Length: 626
Ligand code: PLP
Image (cartoon, rainbow, N blue to C red):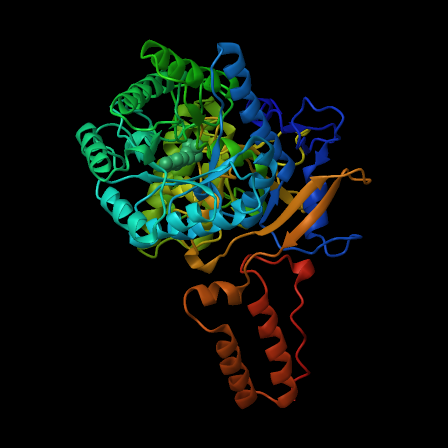
């Protein structure tokens, strides 16, 4: 556990149990009445077709824990309630979940359900997101906010006005100045009085990777003069009372509460100015940015960690708003936040299998080598090397082996050295490097996963997630490895880890399955992933705690997209493709064989594109050759 810093990034949901496996505490470790769940047992139940109740799902697998979502929401809510009470703040907190972080139907429905007691709402940034948010909130608390962000056309604005008409507590947030004209016209046309918010471009800028949307030159929001023009336009239209919310978003992963307080304080000043200008202000929406400590270092100097927890975050926000409002004698606004990463990151774990390993440097050191076996020029190198080894002169050993290898490669290119000799020299070099303790060899672990599909941020922005074996954690890992995925693309690899190194301590693969888990990836990764090489998404199970023998119950199990499904994404027609291949078989092989081939092909169309273990492979036998 210490080697992988599980306690640092995993608490209060993940720990290592006595069996050396990852255990999950979906209600957080403080809730001792709940038993822990052994993650390996979930994987076995989900994937093993032979075990009792085994579901036979193919890996990779996303395991979702709705109880974790509930705990995240409740923890965020109580952090704000505590800050509000202890600071004597005279309004309340009412958060929304930005659905872009994970639009999965069950994730959004769970958030609406679990957040209903405290009026938790949703944020949408596009028309389909708005449609899903509208329909989910029909079952939510009627006071829950529906925040409409993102670039808008007349259709988006009309949809938001319809939401308002359906008694959903909808706020249309202006991202661009032109949107105000559309809102004024359409609301008059449809006779619906809107609630309007505006997104301000703050001067406060966050310097990390995720801060590029902040500051004066950021992509979104209105500048000071645009805000003034919007106020004037609304006033002229007799709609200034519709302007009720101020929104801003400094960027994701805000590193410190100092920066947060700076931004919130600036926004609170704008809020008070809008009150002064006659708007009917009620809500300050501080956007997202509540960060996650991916490496457990609690550092505010990196993109993958943050130097605060939920309580410190909430206190900094409440304090900063209160300070400004009191100075300006403005009534305390409702505080809304749009935390996405902090709500959904912990709730799912991506499980995948290592299916093989190889050495990154040479293929192996097992080929016997002697001077007689080598071409003449190389024999001298070999003798020099032996002499240096006898003298204990390890520096020279390394120099001679490298020279020998270089010469050997040159001779191979000219056809003077055979493949066996080349392999033997490679092996010797590795042996010498190992013997003199030079650069521990890093192995390449082949993983049954597509990085582009399941961990796109590792490829796109070099984001680092905690990735560790989910079992054998009571055994010292004695190998260093990088992870190499299934795609035919050299970028399909993971070679940056939370230990700050380019390799991960891993165990030797001993014939059995070796399962790895990627944690804290519940936000963004699923929606960003693509279908490079036509690998689709993973299978998914939803797991809740139960009183049964394994302390968990699988409440939903969905296989990942099949080969047919991913082909359809690229406009192929799997049914027609199958028919074409079946007819071809009928033309080229016997009637019986054609039927067998067709049934084998049908199975491949139906199965996920990932590697299938030989034990579950079942292509039918062809009839004996005629
Ligand atoms: N709100 C807005 C407007 C955003 O652009 C984002 C994401 O970048 C969020 C909320 C969610 O941010 P986070 O996931 O950091 O909480």
